[in-house]
Image (cartoon, rainbow, N blue to C red; front, side):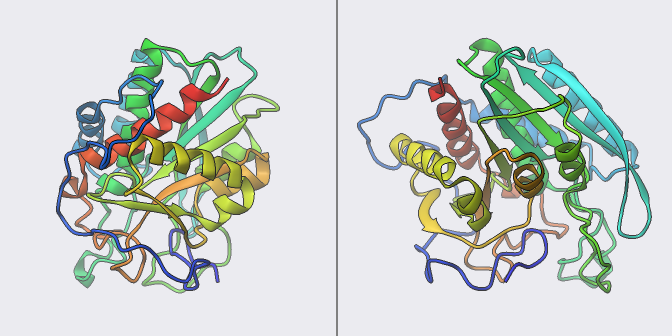
Length: 332
């Protein structure tokens, strides 16, 4: 059973999950156990990644057609250029479920542009225009700040970009910040036929910034900053790119981050990796938080007014960012 974007299936393949720590506790950011493995990637700076998340949040909700959205988009472009990326902005008018025309902006930064062997890293940078899961109905039509849901993945990838500038890997890397991901039909409204989620990635996957674009694989980061977050092997990711999943999860374990990258199968989630897989045939996976303590499967603050910086952990950013770097730098 596949539910709306980011709603985890009611039936999970594994039947049960490892217990995980949830709530507001923090960790040190160090691997939980010594492992005989020598990493080859440069160090991922969690303080730096945290500051990039905080900077996005400081603009306010990044909803298309708002000045906050424009200002944050300008910031992302400036940062990618500062970190040595070849930057392309894919601007497009996208129609939402309510016929609103959104001035959307996919932001692409490329490294080793002439290398035919490429890895794709992506996240969404917009935030939800409604807080439709907020416990207070008075907040339902207020936009979400989106510290974890949006800014965390982008913050990790900005730090990845900073590292790439200092030491290029053997392969080409494309970093994409997708827009208009989180504008699906609110839960307090009747459903509207159509696929209204992931509009930015839907457009790019049919109209890539490079004709005939291809990559060895893609990695989506979505909600990757929560304290003690756990990431399970998402079902569509396993279907389209099981080898990529195993590559990432085994690397995380070798780095000592197995408590975050849990070796269990999760549910099927409609997210930006789906159009990249189905329209462009780039085998792509989704690193996305699973929280067994909530009905949604995500943090208690998801799509509410409480998705703020209190839900961002440097330790979790470190675990995700270092794992992604290690995977990229091991590619030949």
